[in-house]
Amino acid sequence: MDNLQLSVQFFLQIAVILACCRIAGAVALRFGQPQVVAEMVVGVLLGPSLFGWIAPDWQAWVFPWDPSQTTRDTQSYLYPIAQLGIALYMFQVGLEFQMETVREHLKASLAVSIAGMVVPFVFGAALAWFLKQHTDLFPERTSAIEGMLFLGASMCITAFPMLARIIHHKKLTRTVLGTIALGAGAIDDASAWCLLAVVLASFENNVASAAWNIGGGIAYVILVLAVIRPTLGSLDRYFVRRDSLTETGTVVGLCLMALGAWFTDQIGLHAVFGAFMMGVAMPRGAMTRDLEARIQPLTSALLLPLFFTYSGLNTKLTLISSLELWLICMGVLVAAVIGKGGACWLAARWAGIPQREAAGIGTLMNARGLMELIIINIGLQRGLISEQLFAVLVVMAVVTTLMASPLFDWFVREPRELRV
Image (cartoon, rainbow, N blue to C red; front, side, top):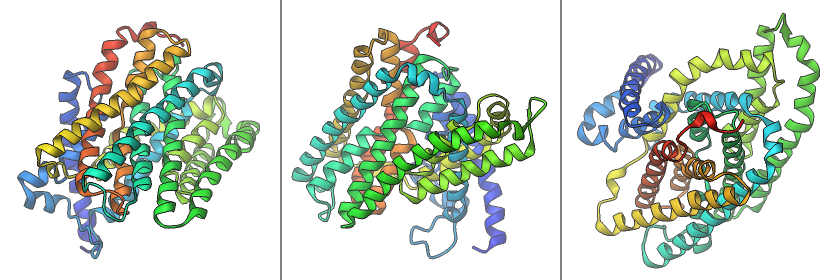
C-alpha cells in the first residue's frame, strides 16, 4: 500500500474500532464489565479469532496484515499509535498514584507483590517442565530451563494498565485497596519483564543484555524519584499561572512522559513503566490536575481502543482444536487463578487487610489482560513457544481478566465504605 491508501484505510479502521468498542461496552456494562474489558475482547474478536474466521476477505480488507513485513500494512502505523495510547494512559495513572499512601501501606504492597510473583512463578515453572517433557508445545530449541522461566514470568504478570483502568472506573484510585493493588501490580510487572529479559538473554546467549535491562530499570526508578521529582517540584511555579497549568507546563510533562517511555523501551522494560514513573514524578496540585484533564478524553476514547485492537490482530484462538489442548488450557487457567489470585488474597490477609478488601485485591491482581498478550507475543516472535501454547495463554489472559470485575463486585459489595 502507498501512503495515501494507508491514510484512507486508517480512518476506516478508526471508525470500525470505535463503533465496535462502544457497542461492546454497552453490552459489557449489563454484565458488570467496564469499558476496558469490552475493548480488550473486541480487539481479539476483530482479528483472526472471529472476524477473520467468519469473513476472512472482509477482515483482510479492513485490516490488511502482512506477517512477513514485506509490504506496508496495518502494523506499520497502528503499532506506534497503540504504544502512544498505552503510554499516555499509564502516564495518567502515574499522575493519580499516591506515593504517600504506598508508604503508609508498604508492608501490604510488598507482601502482595512477593506472593503474586513467587507462587505463580513456581506453578508456571512446574507446568512448563511437565509440558516440555510430555508435549511439543515448546519448540525443540527452547530448553527446559528457558521454558520454565518464560511460563513462570507469564504467570507472574498482572494486567497493570487494565488493573489501573478498572480501579479508575470503579473510583478506587485513592483507596487503600486501589493503592495496594497498583503498587503490587507495578512491582510484579517490572519483575516479570526482568525475568523475560533473563530468558531472552539465555535464549540468545547474551547475558550482558539482561544485566542492562535490570540495571537500567533500577537506575531509572532512582533517577525519577531522587532527581526528576524534586527538581520538578522546585520548578512548579514556572509551569503554573493563576492556579492553571500553562501550555509550556503541558509540553514539559508530555516531553518527559515520552522520554521515560523511550528509555524503558530501549532497555527492554516496555514503555508503560517509563510513562507511569514520569506521571508519579509530576508535582501534585494544578500540574497533575490539568495534565490529567487535558490528556484523559482523547486517550480513553480514541487511543486505548487502538492499542487493544492492535494486540488482538495476532491472536488465533482457533488453534486450540483438540481435547488434550483444552485440558491443558484448563490446567493452565486453574494454576493461574490459584497461584496469583489465591496467593495475593492470603498475603493481603497476612498483612492485616480486612477479608473483603483482601479478596478484592486478589481478584484484581489475578487479571492478566493485554500485558500478558504483550509478553507472550514476544515469546512467540522469538520462537520460545509454539502457536498452540500461545493460544492457550491467550485464553488464560482473557478469562482471568473477564473474571476480575464481576468477582470484585461480589467480594467488595460497598466500594464507598472502603478506607482511603
